[in-house]
Image (tube, rainbow, N blue to C red; front, side, top):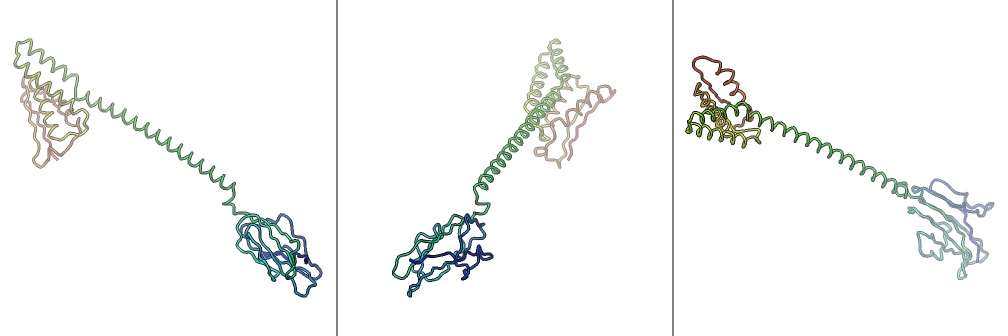
Length: 290
């Protein structure tokens, strides 16, 4: 069988060797040819010498891309385009028509994958993703801790404000004076007045405790609470002052809210610092207007 030789291996922009010339009939292919993924097209030339009149025919294949042989070919050049990354071996052998094929000429090469398809890129991307998720998780944990700490601070502050509000409503001086008044009624054998005073005092205390968890109260409830408070203060002082509570008609007393402790401190100060030292007629007027 005729012996076949590789005569040229070329890319679109370069040759691995010069083409066939009478002075250089063949060449030895370079070893360990490595091509980047974007240079994945090759043109391979080959030739064989035969003295038979029938000429020469070839068979070739690219192991790694083709499973079978291309037989009975007469062209002395083959073009491969768009090869995927991988390792390939090109084999070509020659024969006279009807004769056996001779030993093949072989050329091996490798096309490397793009960097984003390499194992180290996958590993690095996975590691980077893991670190990113870990950082996000840590940031989320820190944010939750900060939010929980803030909520605890707010809860603590609200509890303190609640206690302060309750303490402001249940004024120790008022409670002490009210109990003293009840005691005076009992000691003076005025059981009826003592019972009436104690009943009203208990209702006011219960009303204050029931509303202690609410920051905003309707105007109507605030007016009712102030009326009970003033009634007790008036009884305790032997009705030494008069009072009135007026809500203007253009104010919706049932759907308009006011802060819980907005009115009571002013009323208490008006009694103790305004009316008690005053001579003559003592009148306390509360007018609630929008």
